[in-house]
Length: 192
Image (cartoon, rainbow, N blue to C red; front, side, top):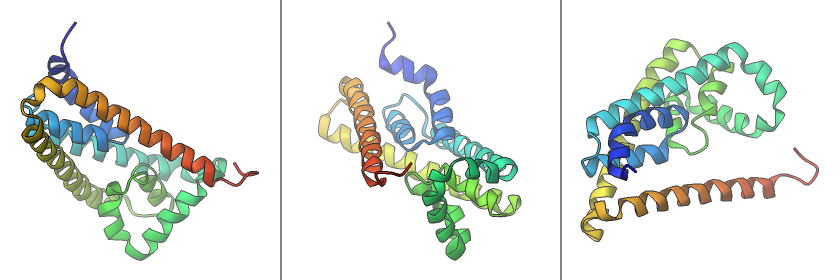
């Protein structure tokens, strides 16, 4: 059975790209920690996170451009999030396009909603690329510094890497579960 270090070295970059394509905060921070531990290279972590995030958001934008209105009509429960995005958009469009990925839970729907509102593809693509690069550098750098701080506290972190990875996954799962339960509690009794 392969150890955690060899699994990360072998599949870490692929997991990083796929994870940042889909959502990515947790996997990006873990990528930064793995880079600090010497299992991955920090420039590659930043580069692949940038490409994954950029590709995921461009895909969501293009899907929104083509099928957005029909999809929104089919899922009226999304209206709260759509309205929240649109309120930010109308006041701070360029700033919002640069920074939306830094707001948890809004990264995936924002490009989709922007496309349904008629934002030009070129304008979105340029600001999306700048924002994706800033996000990738900040997230990977934050993970790298976090790994360095943990190593200072724990000593040889490689001995604890399996436990640390498991703890981060459990914490991420608990946060997602807590958020889902909170949403259910906020939904009116007769609502969707």
